[in-house]
Image (spheres, rainbow, N blue to C red):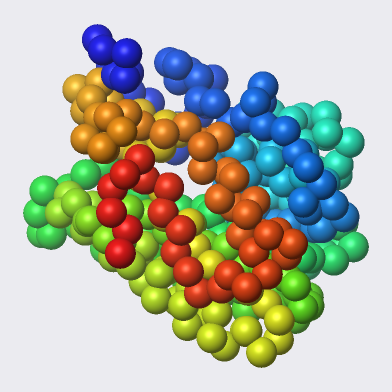
Length: 285
């Protein structure tokens, strides 16, 4: 095993943080806030683990109050994220929600606004990806529907519900992927949703710009999150991320600062309609 490799391991989907070896770095010991988001109110979908947890922690340490969604089977991870946010002195609102219908998305936004007193930042982070499939003939109706509904329809439903609460200076940040630019044939459905997210990001930026709302996306490369042992074979886990120019996978803590930058009106007030790559050197174009 090289310094940049991971021990072979596997989990049942959707995967949890505690069994991972090594544990992901969400910035627990390293992220230092500078009040970039003081007093702001953020909703992060899929904030229980991985990139979502790192963003929730970074936002809280930057002064934001945070609501986030999680699936029932992710309650253990959700409790850990809530504790991290609460330790900063900011409010943490954990919302159990499967985002595959518009009524649930409406409820999530309404609960966030009710409990936080408003909404300034929406992070559409929740996503669905399952085991790699070699042939399109093997893509079931259920998988296609779940992938597109979770990754794309929910983004539209949540954004539609949120915009009425967002004012000038507000920010919407979508989680894209290197898969939108360099798609794996074995992730045909997932990669297609990420390409669509890029398109929607640019289009929404044009539509919402006159209202002072900025819309951007972050495109991560290979990042060490529970999604990996839950969707890849143990053999592939051992080499995960080694095909990047930097020769390793990234950690959630290395992605979160991109979300902080894009959310900050002080730092990114003229940044809208862009897709920011955090890929270890893989091209985003």
